[in-house]
Length: 397
Ligand SMILES: Nc1ncnc2c1ncn2[C@@H]1O[C@H](COP(=O)(O)OP(=O)(O)OP(=O)(O)O)[C@@H](O)[C@H]1O
Ligand SMILES: [Mg+2]
Image 1 (cartoon, rainbow, N blue to C red):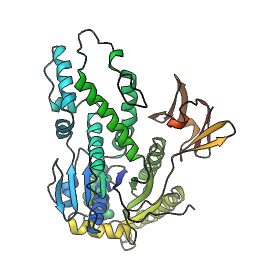
Image 2: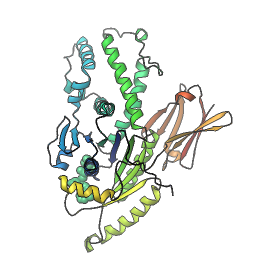
Image 3: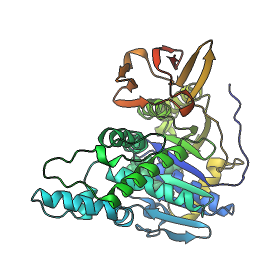
Image 4: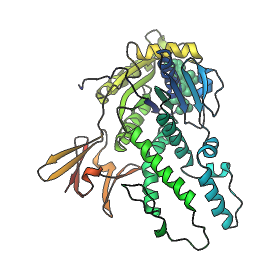
C-alpha cells in the first residue's frame, strides 16, 4: 500500500475542492473543513459554486454573493454568475451587446449572458484565479455541485482554450490573439482592441487557473461518498475522469456510516455498509480515506460543524496534502518518450483514442480531452497508445 505522505502547514494558499454524488454531504464536509482550518488560525475562504447554494443553511448564517466574514478567520461566498459577469466581464458584455444589436436583437443583459453555455463555469474559475493571486487567504475551500457539474467546471478551461485557439489564432507560447487573420463575418462587427485584450485576459486567466488547480502542491480534490454501491460506483468513475483531466485527488471521505448502536432496524444496512467500506478501502488504496459516522442530529450551525470537523480529521490536519498524485508522467524509452496517464477503473472498451489533425483526443465514456504535450515535448507526435494495468501509455516520437 502506498505510504500516505502529508505536508505540514507551510506557506502559500491551499485550495481544497470537494466533489461527489448529490446529497452525500459535500457541503457539510466542506463547511466543517473550512471551519476547522479557520479555528487553526488559517485565514480561510469557503466558496460555493453550486447554484443551489446551501452553504448558508449549513452554517445557519445568511451568506450571499459577496465575500462575507462569518466567524474569526472564516470568510464565505455563494457565487452568483450575474454578479460575476458584472464584476469581470464589462468588456465582453460590451462586445456581445454590439454583436446582438447588429443582428437586430435587443442588447443583452447580464441575466441573458448568464444563460449562455460556459459562462457560469468561467465566472467561478475567474474568482478562484483572483482569490489565489490576491494571496489574502491561507486556504480556499470549494463546495461544488454534484459530480457531473463539477467535472464540467474542471474540464472547462481546456475546452474553452481549445475553442478560443480554433476561433482566434492564438499563439500557445505568447497567448496573443492575432487580430488581422480573423475575417469579419458579413454584418457581425469585429471586436475592437479592448475586446481583444479582454479575450486575451480571459484566455490567460483560464490557463492560469487550470495551472493552479492541477498543481498538487496547491490543490487537493477530495471525493465525498456514502457507503452504498451507487455512490461507490460514481466515485470510481469521478476519480478516473478527474485523473483524465490531470487533477490531483488526495483523499476520499466516506460519510454517513451507521454506528454500531443504530439498532436492529439498521442491521442489514450496517452489514452492507461494512462490505462496501471494505471494497472502498481496496479500490482506493492510493488515497487517504476518512470515515465519518452519520450523526445523531443534522450537522448545521458552527458548533455542530466544528464537532463534525474534529470527528472527520481527528489528529490529521486538513491543510495537509495527503497524497501527491501524479496523473501524467513521462518516461524516456530510447529515442521515444512514453506519456503514462493514470486511469484507474477505466477499461479498454470505454476508451476511445484518435489523432485529429495532429492532436491526440482521449475519450472516456462521455468525457473528452485533447491531450496537449508540455512545452519541452511540443515537437513530438503521438505515434501509438495502449492501455496497460490502469495506465494509458502514449508513445511519442
Ligand atoms: N455525517 C452526517 N450525519 C448526519 N447528517 C448528515 C451528515 N452529513 C451530511 N448530513 C446531512 O445530509 C444532508 C445532505 O448533506 P449536504 O447538503 O452536505 O450534501 P451535498 O452533497 O452537499 O448535497 P448536494 O449534492 O445537494 O449539494 C443535509 O441535510 C446534511 O445536514
Ligand atoms: Mg451541496
